[in-house]
Length: 168
Image (cartoon, rainbow, N blue to C red; front, top):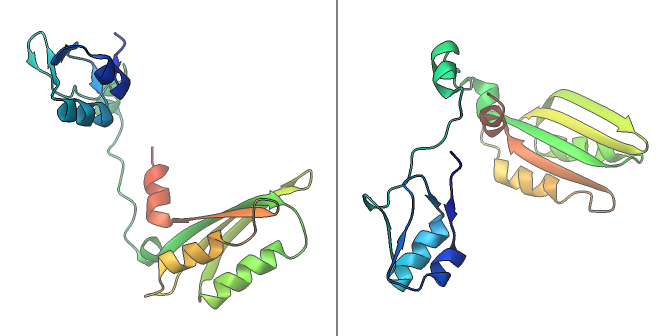
């Protein structure tokens, strides 16, 4: 059964002091805030509206039973100080040298590097280990300011975030 969404626009269009929705309706946080500010109650035929449980899909029960529990990302030194750097842009001489010079100034150690070149554009991925105590935020700011929209773009993600995003 498809779910319905209640948005801010729905709250603004409401003429009365209450909106009656189905139990499976998803009310956006913005709609909840707008309804509270306007004094509009959101309810279901059975009573006050409560957030429905998330829809995990038709295979959720089987997956919970059949799949082993996914391990948490490891807690070793690399996971604590690891960084994934991706770079995409037009190919030119010196791009890799610029990036590795900035990493060297931060005392970072490159563990792995992968680069692909397709019709004058490159995609570069580096896995890097920061020394203990190095400020991740400062390195991220410095690297992401390199290049530019007409040259190349750098994105920096902490390895723990990267592992959590890609563990399914």
